[in-house]
Length: 154
Image 1 (tube, one colour):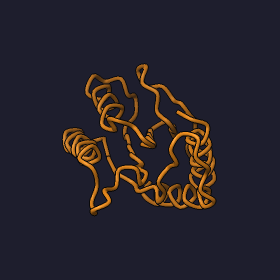
Image 2: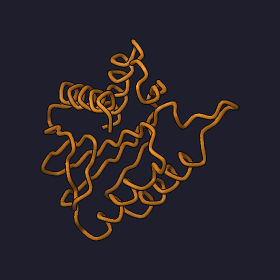
Image 3: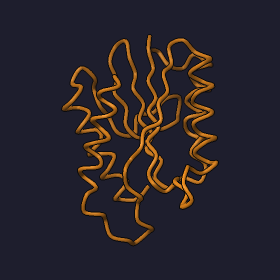
């Protein structure tokens, strides 16, 4: 993950900490060896936020989380997974890529399979620049808006 994506994750973590202080918010939280970009931890509830920046297979990390859940590796009464998709997964012709559709399908199937699991895809209203490109000026506002939507869902 590049510096810009790390800065976005920091902004999401800090924004969620301000909006939902009941949770202890961390970056790179590990669940059975799988890193989660941002996690909110409370005694009864785990919140996992995965930022899909430009990942070739956005279903992979969340599928691992769901596998860990099925194996009993998550020690919480409730688990909420928010998969945040940048505009990288939008198609020029409208709609979203099959990679995003597959990731959302995996999330819905997992949520339907486990009573304690909630899954929600979230739009990150910006397309990340290609490597070496400049940061869009509105990135902080987009990250704050994304943190608002996640916090409202908790």
